[in-house]
Length: 301
Image (cartoon, rainbow, N blue to C red; front, side):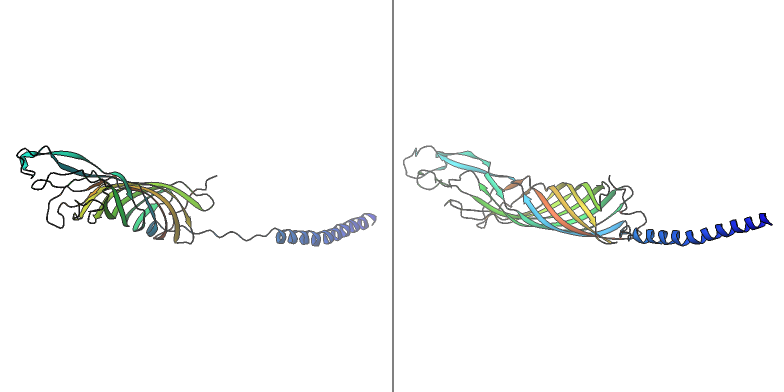
């Protein structure tokens, strides 16, 4: 009887202890979960492998080289004393061709294109069509002293700066390849390179300050090889849209004027070489297609 009583009392004590401890543990557990709850950050889905894009920006021109050959008639002496310069009394001497102090204005640019890539590998390819606005070009060519045959013996050549002026605008069609370097806090830095063609439209060439050069030489259109190097950073702003901040160095080759002036005379053409620029732009890429593997990068630590 005593053993039965002791066993019953022990069972009752255990049951009472369990009843008292269980609510306290439940209360503590509930408070801990509530206190440590935080919402998960929003993570954009992959944006899709292919995209269309549009960019705008500024093009900071490098000063190109310019050439315009000048040959002047040099008077020796009025051998027959007739007061007129005859053909046999002159000879022709080159005054040079290099235009000095060449400058080219800066301008704006706009580009549109399309591309595809694989985010898992970090590789992208695209085709871009671009336009760079009108920019003035000027410099100081060799001094032209005019035709003297058939006229009186020349005096002192004109002391003028003889600046040469024109303007140029350019279209480009480029095939670009990029390598995305990975993701760091949502930003994806990249590097790239491109090759393609530049189509230049050179306006009329005219001269100032030299009384012997009053005619305008016609402009011309030139197709030239172009290449570029790029770097920048992209940031995904939605499931489909990526904002792109980029730098580009582009070499657009060369261009030239025509040869006929507005009086019908034939002239040496004006050559403009090493047309290049540092460009800074902002663009938006809109992606489409399956997003299973695109635009998902390992984070950079």
